[in-house]
Amino acid sequence: MDFDGILQLKSAVDKSLASFFDRESAYLNNVDDELIPVSDALGHFLLDSGKRLRPLFAAIGHIGAGGEITQESITALSSLELVHVCALIHDDLMDASDIRRGAPSIHKQFETIHKVKNLHGSSEQFGLAASVLMGDLAIIWADKMLHESGVKSSQILSALPIYDEMRVELMAGQYLDVYEQALASESIERSLKVARYKSGKYSIERPLHFGAALSANAKSEQYGIYSQYGLPLGEAFQLRDDIIGVFGDPQETGKPAGDDLREGKRTVLIASTLNKSNDAQRKEFEKYFGRANLDQTGVEVLRSIIIDTGALKEVELLISQMTSNARTAAKSGGISPKASAMLEEMAIAATMRKS
Image (cartoon, rainbow, N blue to C red):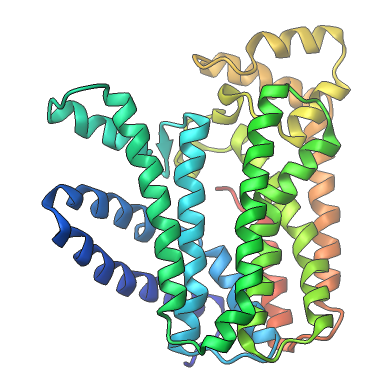
């Protein structure tokens, strides 16, 4: 398969996902007409937007280890996007986020369906149940897309341990994220661990490893290079996400301003703020942080404290240092020059983004 760079790879991933979805949604809709809203909602969620970072990193890992980009390998690598879809649907449910990408979250969409159809029981519970099942369907589809990709069975078997470990680590990170909020943690070290497991490893390091394993040519030192690149960049990626969750423009993020502040997310940015705040700042911060009805005035109060304590500057410095470490690893040799150049481009895209 011919391609010139990241944009062409992304286009190939998009086409592969669309082809898979068309086939699977037709099967689902044939089971019962009442499943049409399920396939429609998943289709919009999967196909209408998305950066495709995980399939792209997997493809670069594949190229860097000597793998060839074919239709079969693109299909296998694209399956990681469905793992991400599962994580996002369940994440919105756990965080009680009503908006995703400028539209109602899956659980809110199905809560509305229940109300419009005047069904029996709780609309809210119906929406929650539907979102759990649809997240589960996305992870099942991920397995199906991988196993039916046409890639040799020996290559899939080689990649499965990494694929399984990635999903275990994702669950672990999600649980730790939920637990940190319940614990009301103020530990930067603990928040960094959440960043590593909730996002860092499954977004960058493991996709790179997965792509390398599918190549059937990967060398042990290449996995090491991918870890040296993927772990710091993955954490930087999550730290950027944390900043966007507080300071992001709703027109770009598709979520309400300061949404993470309403949810009381215990990120590195918040831990740093609380560690650096004086008594007056802490008292003011705790007055607003985690309030579900937080208005724009409250958001601005919290943003000001985060800036005034120097926490934002500290996290920006961390992002810069981690990104620099990742870029150094990408240039260290041991992977193909083409993959190295792509990793350099992806490092900038992952940490300089606004949404």
